[in-house]
Image (cartoon, rainbow, N blue to C red; front, side, top):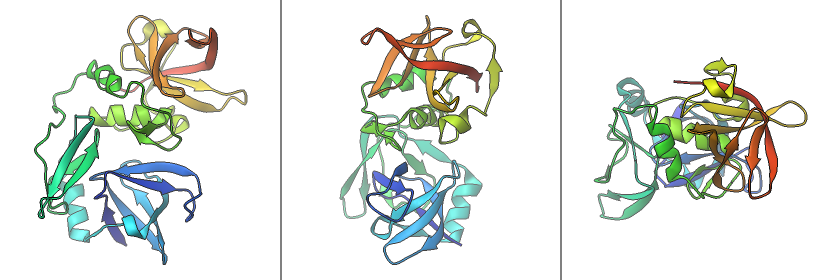
Length: 250
């Protein structure tokens, strides 16, 4: 088994070893992973945080030793960047831009200096919405999880991750986590609302706010009304998503 760590701001992870294939997720700076298979130009990896498998180009692959990988896993000391954009500096004083939610592991695997702001580890549930608002107006991108492109499940995953809580990578898998609530009125700020399509498949998720609002990704990260039917888009004057279930994760 081989291991790697992301030393770029963003690395795309694709469904097949082809630049034109579907983007299934992204690696952000500092995220570590297992390397399952190496080919001439591509390698198949498995992310540690959410067990997501896909292909990255070898030109963006950075190997680490098993000892370094185990050190990250054992220490579990991972700090998350709190600013939308900040920088790390390498030994040659070259700056690399990194994005909110990037990891700064307590390890020698990343020989970079970082003096930006990290997330306060003493987080409350109310801070979920505060972090979510930092992504407001980020464009929608299937497979994305950065403020420059993000999908609905990537959005909720990143907001929860930054606050120290683990979510899986898709809306359908996230819907299997936590405890279901019976009514919208039972929900609290920071709970998750899940929505299904015409086939009954859960394909969308958002974060509940106060006063029957939800922040979610539809074209961009936006705020809309939420009721028992689903999400009402006031700009379009119609419902855009049908509510399936509300989950309390934390």
